[in-house]
Image 1 (cartoon, rainbow, N blue to C red):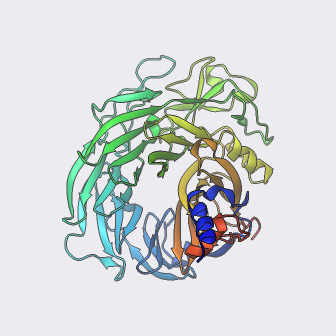
Image 2 (tube, helix red, strand yellow; image 1 turned 60 degrees about the vertical axis):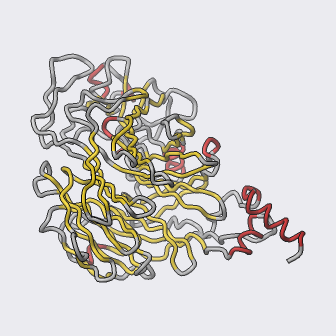
Image 3 (cartoon, rainbow, N blue to C red; image 1 turned 180 degrees about the horizontal axis):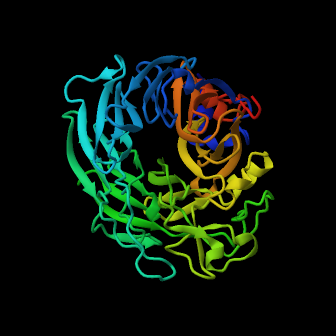
Length: 502
C-alpha cells in the first residue's frame, strides 16, 4: 500500500465525521417478527431482550418465563418456565451465562437471581440461585463480566398516607417499604459481595422527590466503560444514583432538575381531546428517567436517558391540573401532587431523551422532537397527550461507521416507534429518523447485536407481545471501513431503511 493511501486511511480513522450521509439508515429493513402468543404461555409479555453471541440466540424475558429465539430467523428454540419462582423482570447475558431477575410472588419479599447456561438452556452448574433485594427489576453485567448488578426496586404494596391537607401534598412513609438497593454479585464465586443502599447518601442537583410516601427505588443501571462506576436511575425520585464499584457504595444522588415547557423547542400537547396541538404552557416536567446507557467521548463518560416519567402505582401523587385551578387545555394535564400548586404546575416525564455528563449536568435534550415527529408521521397517540406524550422508555446505543447513535423506544405511539439520533458529538446531537413497525406496539427492551457480519436491532414489544428484529447494516471490513469514512464514495454500512408500513 503506497504512502498516499495510508495517509488517507489514517485520516479516516481519526476524523470519521466527514463521510457519512445525513441519514445512514436509508435502507433499514425488518428481518423477522415473533409473536409470543404462539408459545402458548398464558400471561407472557415480551419485555426485555438480550443477545447471546455463543449460541446466536435472543432471550426474551416476559413475566412468566423466557422465550429463547433463533436470532437468524426468529423461530422458537425453547420456552423456559420461571413462574414457580415468581415473575421474571429482566435478563442479561455475558459469555454464555444468562442472569434472570425474578421477583417473589409476594413482591415485598426478597427476590432471586438465577443463572442459566445458554448452551444447555438449563440452570448453570454450581451456585445458580442467589437471594437479592425486594423486586429485582433489572440486571446487568459489568463490561468484563466479573460482576452482576441488580436493581432492587423495593416497591411497597401500600404507600405512605397523605399528611395534612397542604398543597403541594406531602406523604408520610409507607408501613412496609422494602429498601431500594443494588445487589453486587461476584460472578466467579456466585456470592453477593455487597448490597448498596441509598439511605444517607449525599445529594446534589435539584428537584429530588422525597415526600412521595416511598423511598428511593432503583429502576435501571448502566456501567461506565472502565467498569468502575454504575449510574442508577431512581425514576420516581427524579434522580440518578452514582455507585462506586471500587467501594461498592453509592457516592451521591443527583437530582435532575426540571424542564420548562414554556421555552422554545419544548412544546407539548396537554389535552387529550382528539386535537393534536403543541403549545408552550407554563408547566415544568420532572425528567424521571427509565432506561439509561453510557458512552465515552474523548475520555469522558456521558449518560443517555429516556425520560418516561412515573407516578405512584396507586395514583396517589397525580391529579388533573384543573384540581389546582388550571383551565382550558391545561385542565386535563396530569400533574404531580407533591410538586404542584395553583400557578406552579409540574408533570411527570419530559417527553424527551437527554444526554448528561457524569456529574449530571445537562448537555443535550431532544426537546419536543419525539412528540412532534410522531405527529408528522401520523403515529402520535392523542389519548396520551395529558399523560407523558409518547413516553420515551428504552435506550440502546450503537456505533456504525465510526459514529454513535441513540435508539429511543417510545412506549405510547399508535405503532411501535424507535427514534434514531446521532449523538457522536453529545452537545450537537441530531435527529435522524424513526423506525416504525406496523403491527407492533409499546416497545420495552432494545438490544443491538452483530450476527453473520451484520448489525441488528431486536425490539421487545410489550403491547403487542412480539419481538421484532431489524437489519441495520453490514459490518464493514477494516480497509473498506477506512475508505468509507475517508469519504471515498463508498456507503460504509449500507444501512437499511425503516419500515413504516410492513
